[in-house]
View 1 (cartoon, rainbow, N blue to C red):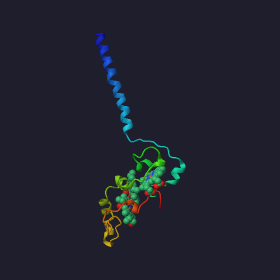
View 2: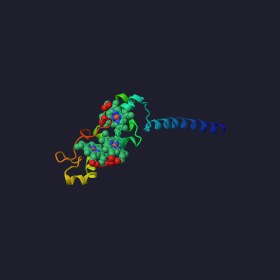
View 3: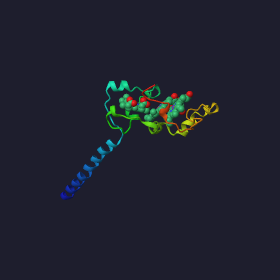
Length: 125
Ligand code: HEC
Ligand code: HEC
Ligand code: HEC
């Protein structure tokens, strides 16, 4: 009987150790990346009001670009579209401007194919 309890205890230990190790692994999988951004760098990279008032932080856009904010790169079309859907969808949202051929997201010359940064910047006017 005693031996059985011992075996049970040992087994329990074996089971619990890897489980807690897994738990830790899972936590780092979640995207709770924390980076430190100097006030100076932050001041140089102000956000557009529509994004600022959503309390966006740098890594909401500069996702998977490492943890050195001074080395962040342009997020390009893919970055914008990861939140704003597709170019077609954006064109659809401003469809009322098609009547005047003035829909910037459905250009008379190029349709919905232009790069976002032909018109929009984040840290510059
Ligand atoms: C809403 C998305 C968004 C957020 C939030 C954001 N960025 Fe950017 N970042 C961009 C885009 C887009 C560019 C490309 C240049 C531009 O549009 O101004 C860029 C470019 C950069 C660059 C490349 C060099 C440069 O100056 O053009 C750095 C460095 C940078 N961002 C730092 C930051 C820091 C630091 C923060 C947080 C304070 C931040 N970014 C927050 C979208 C974002
Ligand atoms: C992390 C998600 C996210 C990213 C990345 C992002 N945005 Fe946004 N953006 C939002 C949300 C949420 C809003 C507010 C809701 C809305 O109006 O659609 C918004 C609002 C805007 C608005 C104002 C909308 C209005 O109705 O006035 C513009 C313009 C805009 N974003 C352009 C861009 C561009 C260009 C990029 C790429 C440089 C970009 N966004 C990247 C989430 C994002
Ligand atoms: C030819 C210039 C141009 C290009 C290219 C462009 N935009 Fe725009 N965008 C504008 C203008 C101008 C407005 C304001 C329209 C208005 O008067 O409401 C606008 C408005 C927006 C809005 C707010 C309206 C809405 O649909 O919610 C978002 C979001 C946006 N742009 C995102 C993007 C993204 C993402 C890209 C790249 C895929 C992009 N834009 C490419 C000029 C452009």
